[in-house]
Amino acid sequence: MQLILSRTEFETVVIAALAELPPDLQTAVNNVEVLIASWPTLDDVQRAGVPAGHTLLGLYNGIPLTKRTHAYNLVAPDTITLYQGPIERAAGGDPERIRRQVRRTVLHEMAHHFGISDARLHELGAY
Image (cartoon, rainbow, N blue to C red; front, side):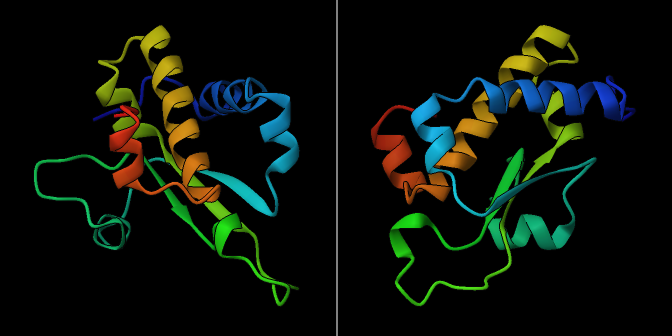
């Protein structure tokens, strides 16, 4: 599948989604780098434990804030990777739906940074 938005356009959507985070959350985010990839690798899908027939839109990799101790020092940044192709496909290629899906995916992956599990997100109705 060909990508709908150019890389620059998609980056602009991601930057806007990050800027929309509540100020308290923006301040609390610590040592995280947000990356963009066109598609997840097989390793990404396996590491995330994505079941067959499901799609990986984003991936958090790192040490959640709730697991960090006083020994957390000189650690490479956590990463949040957003996958443009799957996000665009999930949004049906519609630019406004892409924007909403990026925002939702950013919030979901940031929740993992703050120590919120997928199970808890389900309980909260965030899926």
